[in-house]
Image 1 (tube, rainbow, N blue to C red):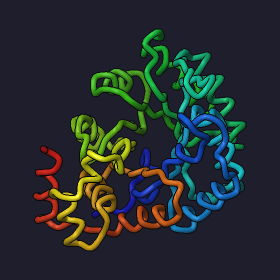
Image 2: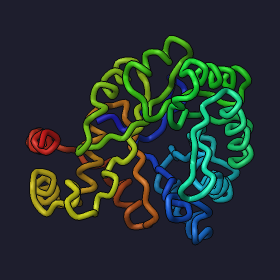
Image 3: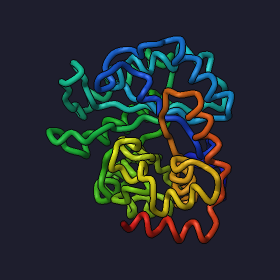
Amino acid sequence: MQNTFTITGDFTVPRLGYGAMRLTGQPNNYGPYFDWEAGKQLLRHGVQLGIRFIDTARAYGPAWNERLIADALTPYPDDLFIATKGGVVKKTATARFLDGSPEGLRRDCEDSLRNLRVDSISLYQLHWIDPDVPFADSIGGLATLLKQGKIRRIGLSNIHLEQLKEALSIAPIASVQNRYSIADRHSDSIVDFCAGRGILFLPYGPLGADPMKPGSPLASAGGPLADVAERLHVSRSQVALAWLLQRSSNIVAIPGTTSRIHLEENVASSKIELDAEALRSLEQFSAS
């Protein structure tokens, strides 16, 4: 299994990253993380473990998540890659709206530059498509930010395949971030399309929206996932992450956690090789 992925041919990262969304206030990722120092320590521990890809968004907090990352990790190591997103305006824990206009994306981008304390953002993603703005206008706004040097790469999140094809006709697209896991295969065609074009695929919710909720496939006490985990003497979550990494070489998994133990467990999943028997069994799980 390939252990690294080179983004746009010029920046190589390990394929197990970290999604920082959970290091925010609650409910609904609103406000600063309740234990700022513990959040900083967790981020630093992740870097010590070898994580080099961190995913965030201006909407997380809003802004607080980006500020926590900067507070914890600046000055950034030269080999650390930070991706963020714009286009979502969060007013309260329950009130938000989309703004994918070129002006709105520029505003969000400039705020993220300040929050992250950088001169240019390595990967800037359209968080959600704004139905009130022509999609081509949103992509054009991102292309302008790229031309101005405020961002180095354009990414898209929560999109369909035809939307990705349209975006590629307007600007270079470096990444796609959609919900995807062994339990949710709706983006299979996008994973394969991206793989054929060297585009990074970032599966969010890689362990399911709430993997420990009763009834969740990843929380099930039985079935193929549990059987493979028992045979390999690892956790079900580790098997689910290992499956993602073996699903396609363009996938960088970005599981999130606030637990140091789970962070270490997630990183260790990148060392798990699923044999042919395990993969056959897990295909049954995917189809169930």
